Length: 176
Length: 380
Image 1: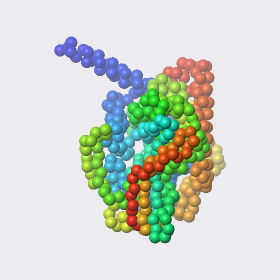
Image 2 (image 1 turned 30 degrees about the horizontal axis):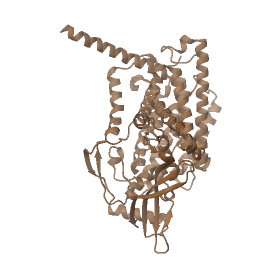
Image 3 (image 1 turned 120 degrees about the vertical axis):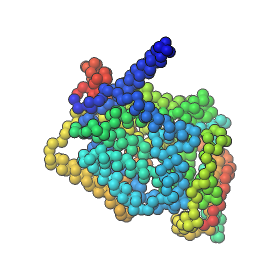
Image 4 (image 1 turned 180 degrees about the vertical axis):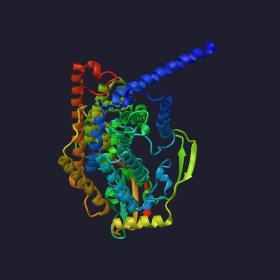
């Protein structure tokens, strides 16, 4: 038999307490403040969607390009951020493609207005902003003067899956 | 005085007894034979190299203005994405360490190096602000099994943890699942068919992230009660593994098999495959067979050559971006990749069922051996 010799012995209580703290402390941080990394935490995604009246809502993310010639054109946002993986879309969009005006962020105790830490996020420097704009321009083949980022609340019918309403939630314009 | 201390002593004794009992149950349920671990040492890094190794070199091409890491992460210590050469060197080291683990060259050290590099690289990938969790399980798996030196016969006890690596892995998977299920339990168990937690994963992904393959287009046609039951099933599944771990080896195998079915379901319905979770499950699904050692030098040489070729196929695109990535050749479309992940989950579920059947047959022939903590191996 080639099993480990200690297969039937159990570790000390000190080890158990150490392991418990090592696992629970980051999880408590996630629950109360913000998720740390690295930590043994799996994705929760505990949100819910309202299905009353046979309808549902979700947020759609759109980018439009504005040029001198012609009307605004919708841009395929996943192609725009490639090679970044699609799952990072929400964060990149939320950060206004790194060109947001106010990089100040606050860490609040979850479920309260009690600010534990107000910190200034690194914030892109002027050089990094310029680099980002030229990156976007190269990706869009210099076709647009500015981009409009829109968050739309879409309402749909649960049975037919057709869209019944669209409402603009937030609009940001960035000049390229 | 003695009257005051006696109850405390008895409480301490009871707690210590519970502590000992819990560990005995967990160790009994999750312990694997050294031959299984040695088989994992070959199988898991091979799977990683062929199918699951992500490419990281693309991160260097992202604008630094997008770098917005979580405040409590390693990434927050840096001010931007590292240059391409960092990712090229780190990814090459990952490939070489995975190859070294397979051939058994300093498997423990290479395994720990592999984990360190993965955590470091992932810290930069999560620099967009989202901690993506995808790589957590194979990092945990490689860390735990490296701590046990992948079941090497001549392992020194000097660096061993107080518990075996696979037992630690089972506990980490269990705890990870608990972290996923805890918040869901607070919000999804609402006995209200007018809300759905399961669909909250669906609409955004379907409409924004192109997760519209396999059965995804049909999900909204499910009856409301069914959708509500999905919520409860997900919570029960994610909160229950520790209970199954305590119940014994068969129950633990049953939970892991159920997990494979659950992930097959999320792959088909939500197009979220959680494919890296297989690294947390495979060690517990492998039947306790006497894995034969290949003694023929000719077969070993051919096997090594094939693996070296695979490693080279992974190394080339790291240094030359015109060479296509191996997964891009194997799975040219997202649908192909999803279909593979779906099939792998079903295959693993089938392996789990086979093992459960094997265990119940073995239990009938030798119940005393298969169910006691003194014999963590199945009878061969």
